[in-house]
Length: 269
Ligand SMILES: Nc1ncnc2c1ncn2[C@@H]1O[C@H](COP(=O)(O)OP(=O)(O)OP(=O)(O)O)[C@@H](O)[C@H]1O
Image (cartoon, rainbow, N blue to C red):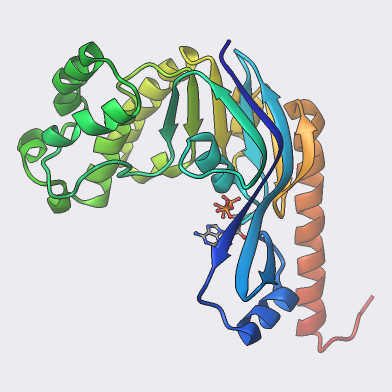
């Protein structure tokens, strides 16, 4: 059965180019993001720590959290672009990631010549590849540019191509980020319609977002990440109000600190 199950997964990025001095500064100044540590001369950023969740058909998981809390890292693991160093991530079903534009696209090849390889990597059948080759030139609206090398495309044109490729096939598990906002208004409308229909036909959706409205309207489950660890996991009704209150607290504390510094550090009533 289609599922995504994470059992205590942890992931760290090794960073080789930091000196001990800059590391020390980071440890003291860090307000968001994962945990920075040094081990045998290698600096690591612990992006995820002991994260667990369980998704079955019809589950729509919203990943929320402040900048650097680990949402994109978790999407990359779910998409098979990186592997957890600890714990177990088990996925059954065809995963289609809509997370990084240009994934599997060769800039030296034309848009048209780039359609097949990414689709094959996603597990598309010959029938699906042929249907995509017919549909993508029209859907992207790239006109004659579809036969020019992708390196000649603007960012928005690359977005159109990547989006069209990834949404050309059926997914069991759709893993998506917020990068879609990059297209122009005309494309965004078409993209949203296509994405809505794809999401309806997808068994499991994992979506990272900063939009609580989107979480409330689309998701059935929410995973709130804080510096790589699970701060909350449950339904939107259970988690979103807590997250919202926490964000307001942070904003209020930051505002108080700003006011204090503007008043020369003296609290006034
Ligand atoms: N390539 C990388 N090398 C080292 N550290 C990284 C790398 N990518 C991300 N990180 C770190 O991993 C942690 C989690 O980052 P991630 O991008 O997953 O967060 P996020 O929740 O998606 O953030 P945002 O909301 O800003 O997109 C952060 O501390 C970040 O600095």
